[in-house]
Image (cartoon, rainbow, N blue to C red; front, side, top):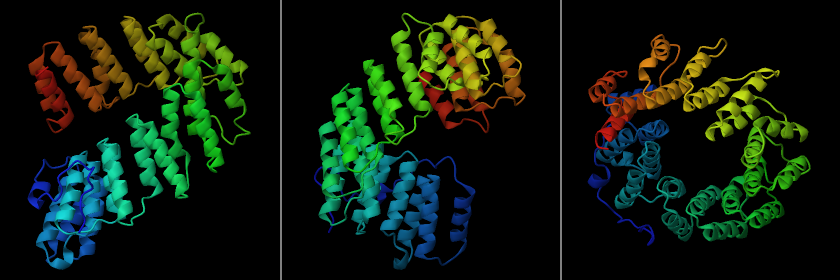
Length: 443
């Protein structure tokens, strides 16, 4: 008889009725899942394989309510179609993907209550729910121990999941202990396992610990990749040790990795933080060219964004004009950074001019920036140029657009207009804008 581990912190063997209480139907269901459900419903006789295939489809779609309905039907069917560990695992996966991790964990209890022995996949999913969804590393660790006692050897992914969870909770010693356990078990080690530990060392400005960890990776036969070095470089930039950053990049070929856009963006952002008091962004870019970095539109966007966040709109504008003089084409992100910066500086007419510039095709992000900034400044009546493009289909609003409009209308005292707006979005009353409306009402 299986029992819940002592450190789980939950009461085991809840009743099926409690575990499978009805919830609000999930918002979307794919055509494949709907067709599969209709197929099963249309036959008087079907097999366990049919049910499990449907549950697998529901898990992929994240339809938790559909998965629970299938489990109920399986319990009412012939004994040959009673839910198995695979059935429960698929249903748990559907609930977790639907944003209902607590229900997924409860369903594991329901599996025990119905006398179904969990397999390795079920335990691994429960561990993942605790570590990555519920952020309960102690409970996840108890699942790991439980698996081991039953002779179900945890996988390297289980350990990596738990290491990440411990690191996120600031429990570095526990994460390092798990890493040692993996070595003792001769598990293959991958950079993904080391990354969260390195992140903690770098966030704590413990470069000596970071160096030791990278050395241990090599000695374990796990070569650090670009993700590892990007984390390390960010830690060095935080300390202002740019000589070390340049050395790490210079030695990249010898160490078997290739710097990417994130590498250079991290370095440039670090330089900006150091040089902002005495130098302009142009000098930062010139410094990058001296070091042999490829200065492209991503580089310019990184520097412009940094100065924009500091409110240095003149420097942002100067960088933009310098960019136009080079054989580098600004992209939509470049314009969005500049438009946001100009609005923040109160240069709304110039922002409108940029929006209408020849060759610039605005996107949903541009739309959201303009709505937020204009409403924030009490200039919502000047947004006719934007809404014309929205109505013409040149820009397709997203959930953020709707949420922003709800917030802005409500805060400007136009509550009835906000409610009517939500009522007429798509088919009426979509969940997120309704939630925003309710939140504003009770603020």
